[in-house]
Image 1 (cartoon, rainbow, N blue to C red):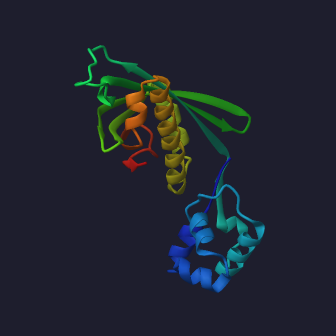
Image 2: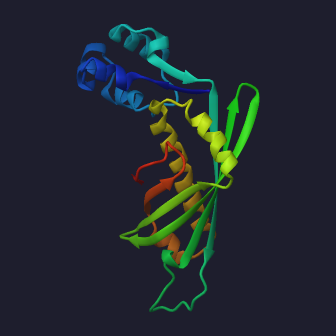
Image 3: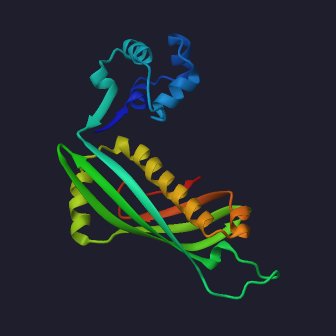
Length: 211
């Protein structure tokens, strides 16, 4: 199931700053910040207990969950364009066509559904070691798009940020590995990061993310 804590909302509702909570509870600012951003894979029971007592909430109010789970799988398909490569005109990232196969496995109760999407990179360039591009992500099937939209309506907005980080992290990793697998030294040496703008049919992938 998808689960997250509501610490950020609870602090906002009470106009509490992280520095104040850290002072009052003795929990480190880094721990509170990481928890509020849902960056931690595991929260200690003592921390949960302390925060719940401090905020006067129950664990049910501290956490939010829905009885579904999503897994993302990304396969990058880089294809080098045909042109003459010289010392004067070496291979650059704009000489590579990059597409993605994206699969979303949705688990609910005892059922599993797999949705297929495709991604295409456009306006690809490299500036100061950063790969800059736009990725268009679309469902391969209109029927699957309609079905997945029903699932998306079940997902509260509070989960969007963590889902966004998960899927874009997998996309970044897959693109990096795909470029590396081309075994072109000039590309591997020139790309150190990415700045991607997303055009997506997924509701939780809707704004640029600098990696």
